[in-house]
Image (cartoon, helix red, strand yellow):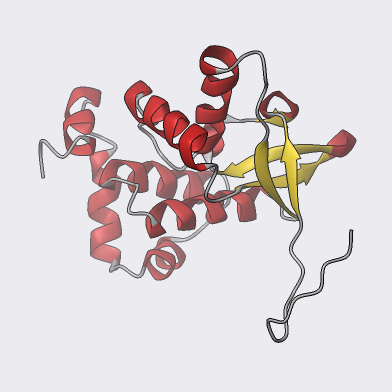
Length: 177
């Protein structure tokens, strides 16, 4: 159905409604080393039921006409929770914005979204930076420029990955500076 708007010059952005089970998810592509807690997922699920999904997830086209999740892991898990536990009789679909990008661009988009939401910790950033270095060949300078931080700060974050896992978790939970 065509829609006419009196809103000045506008652009077109299509949203798709996709069942969560039809979205390919690679946990390694999530820019959060510590995933959303079950309590966070349940709270978001109830918010989606009460108020609707406020922001679409971002997916990218992959082979065989499928899509892979780029950002919105919490929203994805919340709708999965709704479908499995809260309302299995009426499966909900995710609002999805489809973008064309490669795996590196998708990972960068995920980092940017999480940073904009202040949803990452220094440990998350350290893990993401390691992946940018090792998987995508980014230099320390490129990482520093991307994060708008000094090379010294990037080096400090890199050292957090050498700490024992319990200490990394305390840093991620903001129990240690």
